[in-house]
Structures are given as structure tokens and as C-alpha cells.
Amino acid sequence: MELILHTYNLKLKHKFKIAHDAREVQKTLIVELKNGLFSGYGEATASKYYGNSIDSMINLLEHNRLLIESYNGENQDEFWNVTKQNLGTNSFAQCAVDVAVNDLYGKLLEKPLYKIWGVNNKTLPTSNYTIGIDAIDVMVTKMNEMPWPKYKIKLGTKDDIAIIKELRKHTSSLFRVDANCAWGIDETINNSKELKKYNVQFIEQPLAADNWQGMKEVYEKSELPIIADESCITEQDVAKCAEYFDGINIKLMKCGGLTPARRMIKEAKNLGLKVMVGCMTESSVGISAISQLLPQLDYVDMDGFMLISNDIANGPKLKDSKIIMSGGNGTGVVLKA
Figure 1: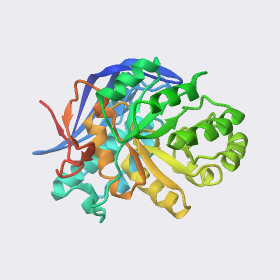
Figure 2: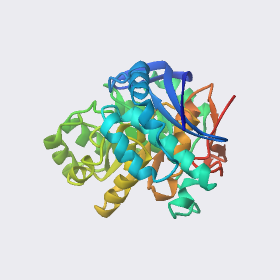
Figure 3: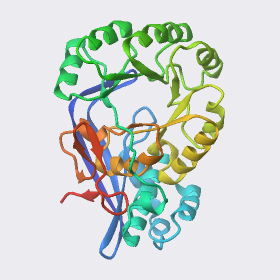
């Protein structure tokens, strides 16, 4: 097995702003595991919020090169447990390795991962398209550029309700709202009453990730479902979230890859939680991995590749406002030359 690392700068079509960050370029690292004619690919992006840089991931992966290259193309779940001991300090890097391992495993078996997992893809949720925080007229322009049945609206300003009221004038599409930890308790409860009037499906992560006492009150009094994001990072968070949220948003890079994400999905469903998988601003390498989980999800946010102008891979495609899986083996991704 050969470990090959690729770095890229993904250029965003528009400046992307959320409550705690803004950027025009997203740095990303692609992990390639090559076994003869077959290569598996995984992705990990840099993240200022999580203190994660490309250099730190490269250093960690190079330090563990011999371990990673020892993968024999079998039992990817067991290999995740092995790498957890060495890569667990950086879930983004571990995710890239885990997805590359799963992709390679599927390619060696000549099957898409979802078929290996024993699920069918006849019924798939439609991804939302994300509108970052900006001047209202710019947000309207972004919606007009990408007509879509579901929008995730990033909020976290003093004018959040006014933003939704104005955007609603320009589309009848379903809204999802993501405050990225920017709201308070009373603000969230009051906003839920207003947002319910404007065809908002749910509110994602309104309070700070560790404000569990506040979330209990919000959970009991909100007039809209509440989905955990920053409060649900690892497998250990799922059971706790069941007491404070209506559902969870799993991010592969935050939990460490497809292997733990599949366990989180199973546990969440057993606890009666709605399950969403979300993305970072990433290429089709990461998005292709998410696509394999689609048959198991209630909601999905996998528009990362739609937000960039220089996608580095071929994966899922768009057709009639729906995301179509590539049909290839493994995650179905092919890195461009």
C-alpha cells in the first residue's frame, strides 16, 4: 500500500460567511491510498474553528505513514480502531484515512459502499443548498443563481428574522436555519415562533455547544425541531443529545470518518432521533463519501462541492435539483488529473 498526499486550494464561488467564520478559499488535503491499479481517496479540510491546519495533518500522517501503509485492503472497521490509537488526536486526518480505506475497499470488491452495507438507494433525501450570511440583496442573488427546493440559511445577526422575512418573498422553497451557536435561550424560543410562520423546517445548533442547561429549556419550549451540530461531534455525544435535541447532524471530519458515522446513525435511530449528515466546504471527494450514506438519512447537507468553482474530482451530479450518486465503486469518486 502506498500513501500519497495531495493539497489544494478550493475557490468559493462567493465569500462564505457564518456566525464565527468567513472565507473565500478553502484549503483541503486529499489522502490517496494506492494498491496497484486501485486508489481510494479521502478528504480533510483545514478549519480555523477547530484549530486544524493542513500542515498539522500532513505531519501527523507522515509520522504514521508505516501504520497507514500497512492496511491490507480488508476489514476496514478494524483498521479504524487501529488508527484511532495514533490518529485520534486529529479527527479530520483520521476521517481522510478512513474514507480512503473504505473507498479502496469498495473498489477492490467492485461494489459501491452502500451495496456492501446492504442498503438500497431507491429513496434518497434531497440536499439543501446553503446561503451564507451576507447583505440581504446578495443572499437573494445567491438564491436566484441556484433555484433549489431546500435552502439552509446561515444566521447569527441582529436582523435574523428580517432576513428570513425578506428571503421568503423571493421563493417558496423550504428553509432550514443554522445559527452556528450564535443565539441565546430566549432568542431561540422567540425566533422559533416567528420562523415557524415562514416554512422553516428546523433550527440547527442555536446555542453554544456546551450550553446543555439552556438547550433543555429550548428543547422543551421551541416551536420548531432543534438539530444538534457542534454539540454532536463524536459517538459519545449521541446518547446525550437525545435528551436535548430532536435530531443530530453528523460531520464525517468531526467524528473521524464513515466508520464511526455509521455507528452514530444506528444509535441515533435507536434513540428516536432524526439523522442528518452535513458537509464542510469540500470537494467531491468528501461529498462522494456522504452520498453512500444517503439511503440511511432523514436529512442531508452535501452541497459543499456546489459552492466551489474548481472541484478537483468527479462524484455525484446534479439533475433536476436532485443529487444523483455517481454509481462508481467504493465512494464513487474519481480524482481529476
